[in-house]
Image (cartoon, rainbow, N blue to C red):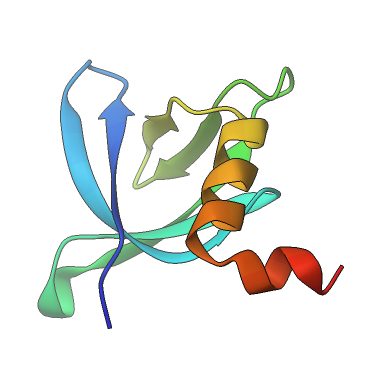
Length: 85
């Protein structure tokens, strides 16, 4: 089983790689850190749908991909989900 990782940007402009728990066009659940020091965060689409944003421990995280791009990634990664609709 492969672990999917995405790069998110913090409010200070730094980028960091986080592990994806669940990825849907309506929201992305990610884990920051490893072991007992990990923190979960849910990234929700922004109002204009061009990015995903979430907050963890008072800091904002931004994933700079649109809902359409994320849905295309999901359809490409697992085409059987697309056919069942």
